[in-house]
Length: 506
Image (cartoon, rainbow, N blue to C red; front, side, top):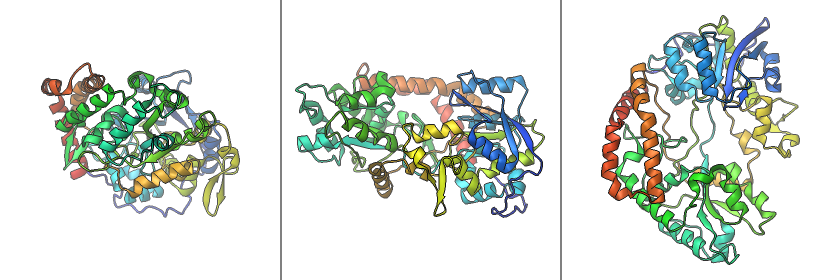
């Protein structure tokens, strides 16, 4: 069922300051996010929004708790609902408990009292579809990312130069380069200690199957489903994945992949690049390119460059990891809220030009200034030793409420080399379409929850065993397929297909 936010109502023009509440109002918000933060009414951003809208939010979440989902469940079980609930990875809960009556539908409120939100959803119907519940209602306002490119491939240009090699353009050429990194001592220490491919996310090793024309995920989330010709599929169940796993296992056995990729995790980039042994990775542009500055101080000539995805064995260049069009983060209005009109106006403020600036850049005059009609971070932010995004979290900006990200916030502190890489990926049209997820009925969700958690673990553990060589993907494949069937993959795909058809095709 498609979302309908018009309902025959005429919304005010987006230019009018419709979000201002005449009488000062204080509302409660339960917001525990990323397992460590809670809403803080003393944030400079929270105070500025309260000044501009006349609505102050007071947090109710446990500041000492370290599990956000657990805090959400405890809040819901207490039946002492605040006015607003917000946080990360709550989409499914907003929809499930919205249909059960805990959160109110926002369709009419948006149509009548939120012109900025109405304008946004009218211009981005794919976002509206992605968050529409099976009953046709919107129960939360999401965090909407901006931009397309997230991760890309990076390689040591200084190593290529030393060995007289060119940037690899195909899977075969990439194999030759990684083999040379392993065998020809590009760091010059006389030891065979180079690790050609490294990554701080173990799941990235599965993504290498892309070089054999196989998928590893359908979105920015690891092990996610994907859509092909209108059909929901899981990449780990497709025949091409077996072929890809054979190739990845071969590379791992030959020492082309970090042997500790499943255990080193977050420390990998610092350890491997810092030790002058890492040669290539797949990671975020903005953060990865900072290593040129930090590493060159101790490693003369250190130079990472972004490269286009080498063409796979089918001659295609793929970038599977694209920035999500909509995050499962945001906020919702509970059934206990006695001021839903004032609350939706507050939500609407964040989608106004002024509110969007505040959500992305902080407080004007403190963290940013307007130049030529656009927000520009002040030098005190850009030249601060602390990362820009962490500075913003500390003042209440760039947090997982319902807001529309402005990619220029990130562009301003991204290095020119990283920006050039991002432009290369976008101009090359390497990004595969992202799967926006599906929203299920209670019955569908019960089937999904019954089978999927165990299935996902089984898939991960099987793929890990194939990579490190404790099991053979060729010999294991038929039994693996039987296990997928016995563990309920067909049932999961069936309910997801039903939800997908309802949500996107009707």
